[in-house]
Image (cartoon, rainbow over all chains, first blue to last red; front, side, top):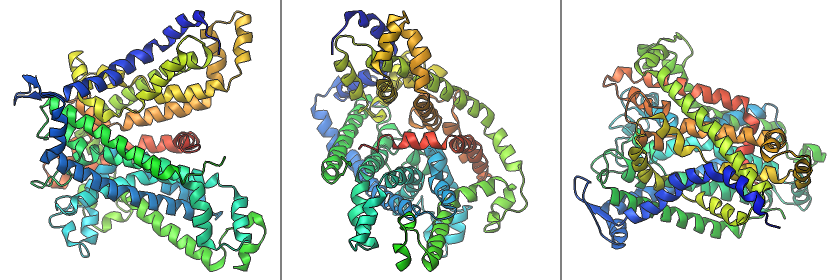
Length: 298
Length: 286
């Protein structure tokens, strides 16, 4: 490519807005958060001193961070595999040329329209122990729905948050996997059939390998969402139930209004940077593990 | 199974009892997936007492708009919706403008250092909001933007994803077209406005839809930058209906939920195709 200096002035003009905005609201806060991770502040949050890089390991090893990390990882394990299996299962089930299948597809995609706040409040209402319709109808099988309530029982609060997340993400997973299924060449199935492969083998030997790019994409997105779970916790449990804090995820530890580090800029920054690093580790592991098996069709 | 071996056109289509079984399974799962929405919508259409009378609350009888009306008044939903509409509209417009301009520079201009700048752009996509919000809240504070529309809008006005998406489309426009236009004396802005933008309308539509939905549904940033009543978006403001103290009023939340979700449902039905294209953009080629 031949460079042209006369293209520079218009380029500067056209890039100015994006560069300035990304600089101020993305690059600067990243650099600043890494720096601020060194700060340790007093109780008022006003006077801070430099505690050095060691603060990162201090924060990481602290009981509160380790607890939140455990909760966050548990949430990933509760939501990602289940969400993936449900999404793939539904997409495969609805991928037949049946009359009226479009209606089912619309229904399965519908939860994509719910925001974090809407989905969380829907489940908050359904699971309300005193008046929620699910608590009322199913308490015969699951007594803790009424007493103390799924979201108030330390053992079930996190699974209940996960249930809300899985439901809310189902539409997204379904849409992406359905699109993936539609790009699988039909003659692959026919050759497999002619070669005597049954339904199960056609699924494991044709469908799954051809779906791998979509599955990788969904896995990374669902994992990222789970690692960033904040609104669900803020609205469903406020990090509780106390004193176990059994739903205090790392984002809630950082941003929650009743979080113990709410006023400490240094600790918040350090925790945020650590969350970023943890997300990167998850993404790298997933790409490494899945990419080998991904068939991109070329 | 002999039926399956018929013509390739009907390959894999279940027949007979398998078809009945498939429908039964589809209906059962559809009922489970839809149940939360159905229950909430019906509760919102009943009076306070009827909405708590389970399982009768699930029957479409004795419907009324009273609950939604009370939620609208108690929750000040009109104000919240207008705030969300204004903020999402402004961010959508802004993101389209900044993305189109930057994408043009990367696709049609050959300024020195272009590829380096583009890589730096892409790198910012890796930085998650969870890291930046701590500091951005401080920055907004120092600008005096806490509890203001500027604080809600400005930090979201640039989108690396948008730049990337639009650039991909611009690259498909033949460079000769730009060269020929330049020979005719057509400037960059006119070429951008009269040729490049119209040719990329479907992509701009998808970008606009996603930006609007993302901003409308955002929770973390608005919850950190807004604390007063006047500037709350609908996502943040709904919480107020949740804690009325009076347990018999919890059903007001359902009214608020229906009001908050309805515009999005309508939008998604209207723009279904753009939505699917946008969601799958990242998955097609890994």
